[in-house]
Image 1: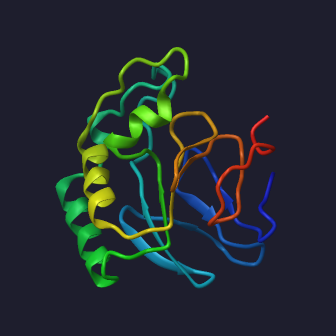
Image 2: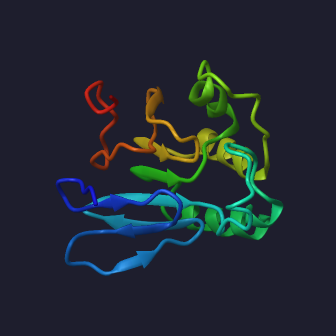
Length: 168
């Protein structure tokens, strides 16, 4: 299993994060704000995939997988507690406004569906003060915008963006 130099691993397909070789593996919850190595991190993801074997690659989530308004309110309250300022955002998908820069001109993509989670992330883009936003879901590695990194195969140190030599 690949690791960052500091032992941190992000696992695609789950909300589990190994914080170091000596720390326990813990489950990250929706809308969690926590400290790690002096940085404040906000995480938000969906639920376990109910259609994993039957899903058409890169299609939308099932409604049961999306966080509800209660989850968004809880996330807003946690972000209120830190003054809407975090160092890093780690999510499964991105905001609606980042869909196009993330996906195009990649071949084989149609216009992705917008849902309540990507719309909530648009709100975060407007209100949240952050250094870098990391997300996966799109099965590619890229820096689609100045403060955004989409990861699939690559692993980067928290705070870093992908470098040309990271993507083969």
